[in-house]
Length: 488
Image 1 (cartoon, rainbow, N blue to C red):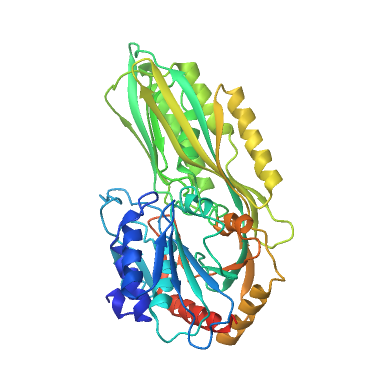
Image 2: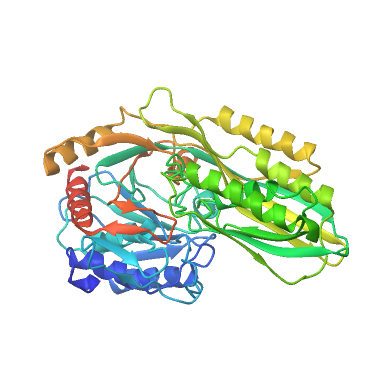
């Protein structure tokens, strides 16, 4: 079934068009131009700010001119992940959505992330802007850039850009839930400079690959017992002979995605080959047993390969592997007062080791710390600093996004909860997410705003298994329309 045949037609038509426009983080020029053209075709005021955010304004419905202003917000970019063997260039290729026969209520992409995070939020906003029948007060639509790779759009927003009272962030993934808070996030990079030496005689060269892991969102999926491919690879390498010498390592593609694959090229003395295979097999069996529930498709492959060039000395190879092994990773702490809520986590999202010329190599470990506690986030960063220093490496702190603290008594939260009961006859779950939302950066800029976040059901965001529950999109639209009519 084509997307434009689904209901509500306007929303799905916009989503289909969005899927046709490449929009990886940092490359939102084309989607921004398309949004401006849409606004122009409807006779709406629109602009692009200095960092690339798009703002579109629509007047209130007749008789609603005195209602408080509402900001509808979504981000333009998407996380770009593809299955192994899928040749997809996210800079130029469109997303190909499809509905599988075996799961007819769910929309997937063919071999890649779908981009429902946050394309479906964008599509809903466009359907509101286009509608001539919805009842609402003055509207401002804010489409931000680069949410998935640093939130630079929200970070660069001017405090004078918007004038509304209520902000509806349409970037959540559970239709039964109203989100009123989120974790903060700190991006860190550990850098290690190492030497290279010419390979000695009598070496056996190998490639080790870890694959088959589910991956997923490094916030909302971090407590599901899934493996981190970077960590799994290093664990296997540490089971190998200590005379191992690394040549290259690579794993993961995004800080906010749990890595699904990782690869290392290395050499060991030929006399150690039999021990290498036996040791890795034992370590892999142990790891498979640990991942049986969260990641049953875990795979590893060790194969002989040709020599490729220089190597790290044994002691420097060991120093790098030991550092990675010692880094905290995954779930760190749960909230004490909220059931099943994650407070603090860490994701080793990207790992790389590559030669810099013939005598030096450069290793980078890119980490995202998430926490609703600023002190816990900073304490974990300090732990990383100490571990890095002890290993002769340097920790560099990057973007630090504040948490969004819940305001349970907010009039908007009360109104949103009441409208949900009206529309669906049941109460929503009121929650804070361990994922990152731009609301944390909006709060210092616009302290007077009342904010909530909601969206349709999305499973496995930030992975090629991402899928969107089609019936929940109808519920999402019905709720959005009803809520806009009540924000008076």
